[in-house]
Length: 181
Image (tube, rainbow, N blue to C red; front, side):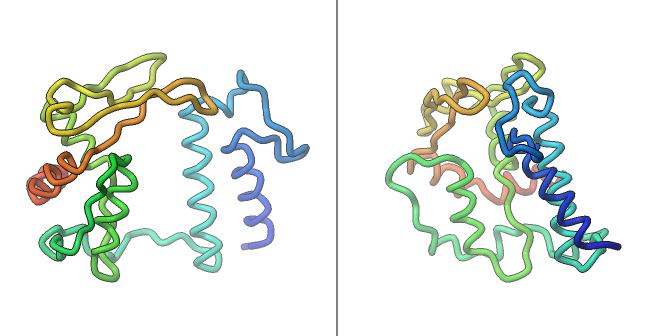
């Protein structure tokens, strides 16, 4: 396998995934197909696969040998909660920092999917895109949302206050157990 060619292809895929023409370096028009969320996500996935191929000297690992995320293996008393509300990625990064070497990371979607299943978040579909939004029950535990503007227009960003962080940690074994099923 020609790793230089793979690296070159990854550069093109990265540029397209970020809405940039890889030949000119200029942003592609908002209406271009590469700016559609599903296409962009697919391109980011392909970029990750190519990155893994490069890291492994030309092969892609087929199966992860890492043990699954296990909250029972964490010292959750060492978790520093955030006083100011934070996004779910920041919160899961703090949890993942406590895991032993080699254990799979906790995916933020595991938490938000559980919150949606339990009625703390609601799933809204617009333009064939599913988005999680705040439900009244979520506000009661300390989840809030703010409107932001990004590359693809306006969106709502969910924030988790310290009370919501404690709520999730107190239920972490249940949440992870539900996700495994």
